[in-house]
Image (cartoon, rainbow, N blue to C red; front, side, top):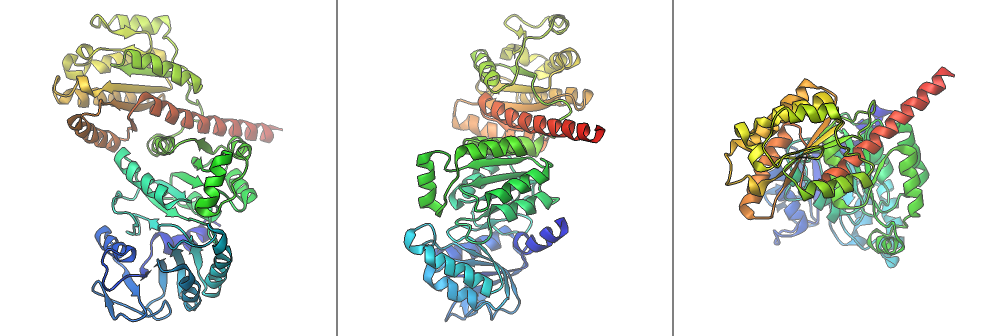
Length: 490
């Protein structure tokens, strides 16, 4: 089954031949022309076939009159022409196209286009291909060197995403890039006239390159099948769902966007509880959750609950303690042995050692930041946290301390982590006041931290929501394992 799914979708994620329908001989800014340029810039090494009814050449490439006339069969066809022209084009393919993505709109998302969408699906089947869309932007697959968006990481990663919105797919790639996400692929599916979330979910679950799966869904045509796929997967990979159309007003917006008929919100909540998929509320939470699963290995043997906050926070730590508590995460004061170990370090006045551990910059810059190793060694050795969040207000570091202090703080944390393998998740919060120079320093430091396998967040609330997503997955897997072992015992 897995091998079959992977083989079936290989031409989409790693195409060797790409056809582009709708490129102009005169307008280099037309969307298909831009797509050709992005293919080249992204390093696509296969054949590119522009399809045009009259031109002999487009952008230096030999053009062909139809999909049936290309020198080789087409793995992936990018189609951006008037809606009414698409069905005849697909019929003429004569089984020589494997996947066609229809960018054009004017189909099932509007009342007058519903019949045309049915004709489109029938034409795709007659032409022997699978259909993505219509009304979507394209695919982004670093392993295949194909992209519909200008900016995106080139490195193949472990995050597989499917999105029913092309615009949101662009946001996920661009925002994900800035936060350190690396993708195994992102596929936009638009109206889901043929291919939809279910089959792509099956691919990502089988795909060894994909470690965590993200889904933006407005509707699932076969909700029962979606439930069965997730149930049978048994949370083997984390699945994060951002559901559009969860309110009455949202359902109306979804209907006008992709022609979707979104289900009752209670159904999606039940789906999450019964299958272990993580249901999030916002795009930021979606990206934050994908990042935590990309960088941290879930530990269902002891799900995350006990949290230690360490950094220069003051009031921010107090607010974070409240926020974490509302998420079911416990920032509890240390017991006496841990307090005594920290007190024995004789840290400067103004340092709080109760949890949260609040250390002013004067404390953290002792020994150029290496003091953190002594503090964390005491915390890990006695307090036994299940996650530690180091939070640094960069405005009091940059320009006031040596450049290496920040690096030393993180390296100290990593050394302590290595002394206690498997005990606690470690994440970093880099807070900034928005100053452009500070933001640039933050981007540089974030990139270095992510390269070390550390998820980095902008605020404590972002880190809390990500940890809650991780804890939910861990608890589900633990409960599933317990129930399975109980059934075997009987």
